[in-house]
Image (cartoon, rainbow, N blue to C red; front, top):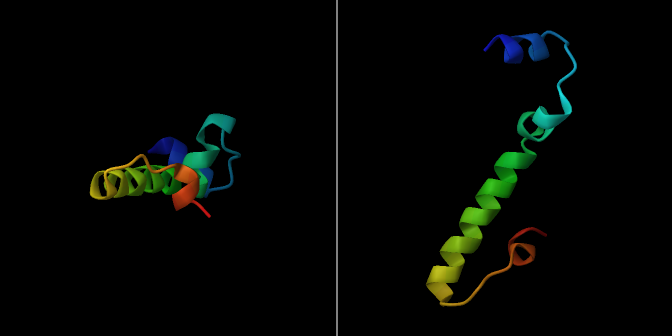
Length: 53
């Protein structure tokens, strides 16, 4: 919690946490879940490139 508070008060984030802080990691996780769901529904392998435009 201290790390997040420090970020909110102007501290520069470590490289390893940037994707978490920008939402990029969340979007990737959602796209992966969407691809898995669609794969099951359509009974085929769905590529992430079909989900992420």
